[in-house]
Amino acid sequence: MELLFAIGIGLTFAAGVYLLLRPTSFSVILGLSLITYGVNVLLIMGGRIGQYVPPLTLPGATGLADPLPQALVLTAIVIGFGMTAYLVVLALRAVGDAGTDAVDFETEQDEPEDPDPTTHAMKDRQP
Image 1 (cartoon, one colour):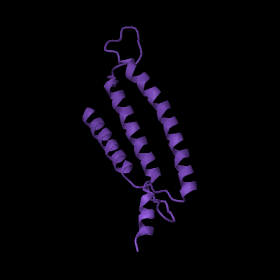
Image 2: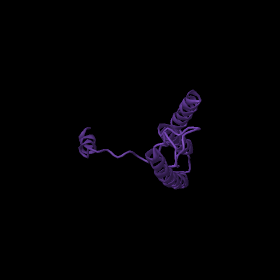
Image 3: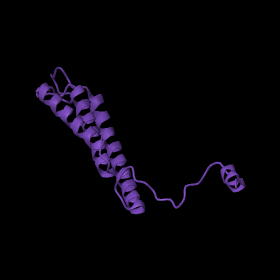
Image 4: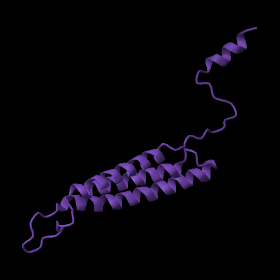
C-alpha cells in the first residue's frame, strides 16, 4: 500500500513540475496546485494513518495516528485555496492587460531608451 501511495505522490509531483515549466500562466497555476496536493498527501501519509489505526482517541485503541500532520494539512488546504484564488485573479488581470496568457511575453516599445545621455551628444558632434 505504501508503494502505491509513493508512486501516486511521485506522479503528482512529476505532473506538477511539468505543468509548472509550461509557458502559460494557467498551466503554472495548475502545476502549483498539483504540487500542493502532493505535499498534502505526503504529510497525511507521514501521520501514520492506516486501515487499522484510528485517527481519534477511542477506548482501548493502541497505535493512534499523529494529529499534527492532520492539522498541518487542514491549514495547507486553506492557504493553498487562497493562493490559487489570488494567482487566478492575477493571471486574469495579466491576460486582460497584455492580451496573452504567455508567462514571458514581450512588450512593444517604440524606441528603446538609452541610459547614457552623452551618446546622443557625441553623435551630434561627429561630422
